Image (cartoon, rainbow, N blue to C red; front, top):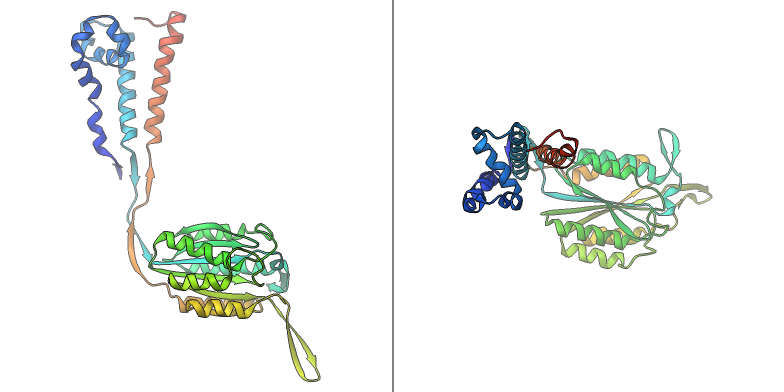
Length: 334
């Protein structure tokens, strides 16, 4: 359906003729047309029956057409599509992913092949994102500093695409867990959401940043931000005389800090030692944060104002050519 966003602007269409009528006494002088050339061309339509030339009639038609197209463009014509029902949960969910240097370790597997920790996070987290219909999703990447990769959006495909754009070292080699929490909290606070959830994944301890994880967690708890933390890194097992001894491949992983963050904010800490663990964790998150909500009716719109605007500009250029180039060639004249 074609509509005008600002139809009231159509009321300015007769403005040139109104101004010409108000200035009519001054138009007896030949110089008046030079001072107000647009109104002079508009008058030709009224006086065409008096025997003006074909050239002046054409100029008048082009001038009036350009004015009509310009006003039409100002009214913002748009195509409004059919109504679509979209489930809205009212929840803002941000995924914060560690892209520090240690995430390059290939101690995970995908289809029985060695894969880096970040590659597995991309695969499993993207599947999680695709299931979060109704949530408004955001993506934060962090290393030595944190930055917003994707602002809060209902476009799950965009979040997945930007997640796969993440590369090791883009944000530095260190790990700023506290800054990642702080940035996520800031973005969700600006969005004024009813429910806020952060899923934070890291394989290390806080070694950079301006905000400590403990302080960031306390601030998050005050703002009602629930944080689920995921510690990433395979475990190595050794048979000893005293039984099986487990050694975390990611020796820098600060599990105690991640547990404190989760407990402080009412979330939960998870440990992912392999790909299957990570998949199970995200399945648990789906149960802990179910997608429920009411359907909101949305109508996709396509703005069409560039078309009449382009037409108005084209007619203006044509008029300029008739005024400058064509008289010199002896093709047109008054």
